[in-house]
Length: 277
Ligand SMILES: [Fe+2]
Image (cartoon, rainbow, N blue to C red):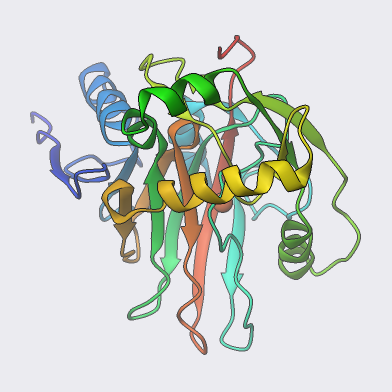
C-alpha cells in the first residue's frame, strides 16, 4: 500500500508548521525524509501530530538533525542515553527554559536542534514561543547590519540556568562555568541565510566591550527580536513531537500553568563538527 502523503499546515508568518501523515515510529523513505528536511529549513519549527514513539524511535529521528548530546546534568530516561524528562509537577512553581534563549550557545559547538515529545500537557498553558532570528536579521536597518556584522558576543552560563538545572536535576552545584565567543551575525550552514545570533539568557556582553556598554544594545536587540511578527507560538497536545532549529531561532517555555502537571521528553542535538561560518 502506498504511504499517505505528508500534510503540512503553516502556523504563522514567522514559521512553524504542523505535519500530519508521517509516522516517526517507522524508518522514513527518502522522499519523506527530503520533504521533512526541506520543511524544517523552510519553517524553523515542525510539530508532528499523533506520534507513538519508543525512546529509540525518537532518537533515530532526532539524530538526523545533529550530533548526539548526553546531557551533562539531567538524567536520561530508561531506554535512551539522549532522551531526558522535563517534568513540572503541580507543586513546583519554577519551570525549565523560561525566558528567551537557545540551548548551549555557551559552547564552541552549540546546539543545532531541540526536540520535545509531549507526554502530559495541561488543558491549557505551557505553550512554547519561538523567535525566527533569520527574519529578525532581515528586518534590521542596513546600518545596524553593518555595525553588528563586525561584532562578536560573549556567551556564558547564566545564574538562572544554574537554578533551572538545580531544580530539574534535584542536585545543587553541578553546573560548570563555561563561556565562548560567537559572531553576532552568523550564516546558517544549510540555508545560507544570515541570522541575528544573540542569546538574551546567555549573552552578558560583546567582545572587547564592558557589560555596561553592551547592555543598551543587548536590551534593544532583545526587545526588537521579541516583536510579535517574528514569533511562533505553539500550543502542545499529547503525542506531538516538536523539533526546531536552534541555529536560527530562540525559544521560551511559558510558565503559566501553576498547579498542573506537564511532562516532556527532550533531546538536544549539537552542531556537527564542520565549520558553521
Ligand atoms: Fe531551551
